[in-house]
Image (cartoon, rainbow, N blue to C red; front, side, top):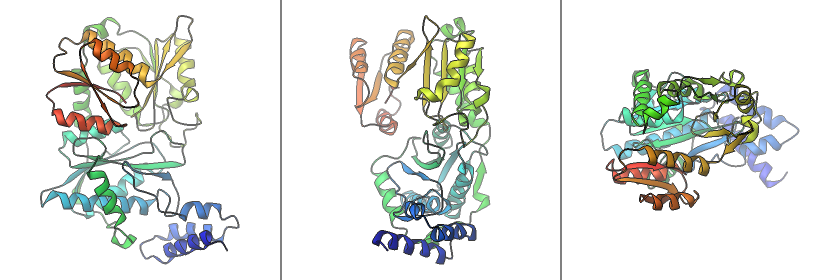
Length: 398
């Protein structure tokens, strides 16, 4: 027997002997141990699923290297410990959202139970909702942290756990490394408080969504232009994700009257049955939206990933075909529109990451607007926003 296989079997047997592991999980672990093919056993147990700077992400299944009740519990216990240590006796609250992936709601409920068992007040969405709404809810409810259960645009076998801080962005230094240390300090599942306190768990109502819609509407730079082009035919697909719960309503509220949803991809489904991968930046994921766009002679087609923090955009060319815009192209066009139609660009600035096209820097210089570069990730842009503390307007991309 190889050393790796021996180590894996020892770890799997530790799961079998743990009083914290439920019978269904133990049955699955035993199946892996009994199987002739040891590949799945090794994949599931050869290491611990790493809590990185953004949280967890992995294939769902039984084992230390998988997304399951126990790895989610350890992550939440570590985050709880850090929140308690930084609160200095003050009340703590968190917000939780989840997407359409298989087990997302279950993992969200586990997360809520562990937080509440640690004396932390929990606000949780009762149904799947987009990640941007979670960020908004953290700020709206004055929470100290938040979690989204999602694996973004990864294949259906995956799920994940994104951790957010008080400003509504994913955690940045020093909080990220400090949370990682707390998670790594948990050496057994018996240290995780799984038994929730229902009195500390509150469902989030529609007032958050309404406030979000109002804020989006307020930020429109020129509503007269939208009114002029309100009847433009648009096509949207949620790719079986959370976007269907808010994107159509949001588009209609800001004034567009002819949004057509791709019905075959409307229903939330963690198996993503109509696409190979739920990544809207890939041509294959956009095919249904483009096909409907051609049939309707739409000007624009859009699709979002399962947790709605990534968007794919296609625009119709003169010959009726569609070209997909990458992030650099989309932001450059939007920035020019905003700057031409924003009535007041005083104290405005642009924030981009170091991997974003330098075209943005050139355009900013021509428009006489400051352009700041950050590390890759919107969390670093959010950190920059915090330094200005709302004193300047920001237009950002990564």
